[in-house]
Length: 257
Ligand code: ZN
Ligand code: FE
Image (cartoon, rainbow, N blue to C red; front, top):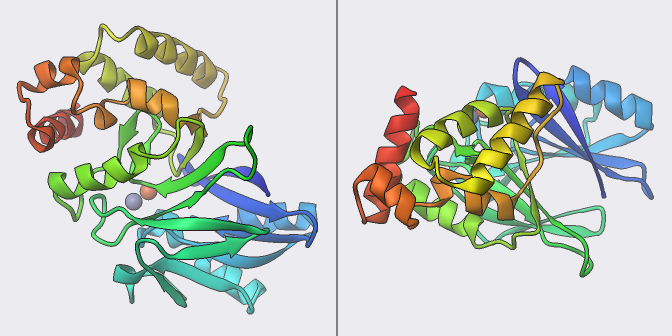
């Protein structure tokens, strides 16, 4: 399975998963149809699936047009998103599996950003291979999604699931927010050496207009404040030893940043 990252709108990424043997593709969160259609044409592939993480327009905006081009494709989304995702046919719950390119993705129910949000995780196929996590707007490189429909307790539970995956997992999040996220991270975890180094690297990449997605989950566990509610530094910054309150205060700080 090859993964293509397609920029869309102002700061979204669409991910195209490609099965070269069958000349078939699946798309994660098509914000728009055009970039997907263009890439499919270049690769000479047909589209067999849309994997949506949640109902926001910058994640489902291309659904209808893609369905018109490929009437046989299947549209997947979260069970709780019933009636909110255009064309949705499959309603996924925690622990469900979806297949593509001889691989199976595990579905995680990760409410918080929205009440219905799901993530797709493809475990590694070989010992040296990475896992692939498509997490929409739940976990970002250096940050996490805003809580539009969920509580801090729900988001902590959701992020705990994602945090339990192996370090060698590539995080394919749906927005290029990394630089701003890490700017905030430095205000609450400024003594973290790895975070300082990461910030400088990301700053360089962005100066050259290069993407910072995917990132490694291992790096996120060590430098993303929204996975570090149990670290000493962040508990001090949030003035709380209680995980949900620590997380909520950090998230509130980022909302105002
Ligand atoms: Zn969203
Ligand atoms: Fe989004």
